[in-house]
Length: 295
Image 1 (cartoon, rainbow, N blue to C red):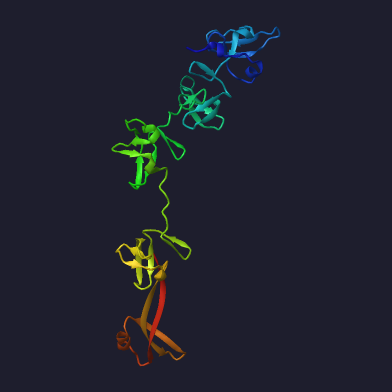
Image 2 (image 1 turned 60 degrees about the vertical axis):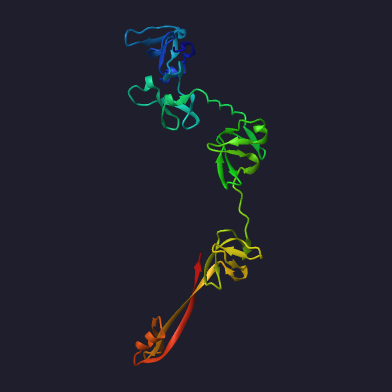
């Protein structure tokens, strides 16, 4: 039921500015004509086109629409549950049924539906008591913890049905039982095996091995102080680099074109270069260079 007592009192200035008015006993719009010298208000309605002159106590300012039995006026603030902020009502949308449905425009020019609004910001639901504590932080149902033995995250679903479960942090997941003493909030940062050129090398890192002339992937520290790769071959950091070097070799005819000495096309073998000699060939040159290879 509409709370008519919440309708705003008649305001001469607002009525003069064109704001709609209504009767005090029902929110039926009446047309404002003006103030009379005797202090009465001149109005007329569509039902009775005659000019009437009721006192100001019989009139109210007409709301734009109603929200949960309360009148909503221009300038009122409503909490938008999607935007999660207060929006300020400006006017009704130019749509059929805007007044009855509460379709309005806010002061930012955005179309809003009153159905998505509250009068006040909803109070947050009180948080339940924690199941137990880990590293001085409360643990609740649904929290994700890192299990050091499983080497993976587990999701807390509740406490084990045993005495002292909350005190000890004995909890359940969807398919197992665990103890908080073996858990952390986050996955721990891996410890580097060693430093190579001031950069940490971790298990799983690929480095260039000078003697192998190829990349190897390190796995763990060996008992002799070196490091094992994924093939369980011991590797010493003395032969490791972050980048590899690939050597390239070509053989080319050196000839004179009348203006100087030039290199011809490069071949993979010296024999092929000899087979492609010309009468201007002076010699066969071996050309070597290196390029960097990154992991």
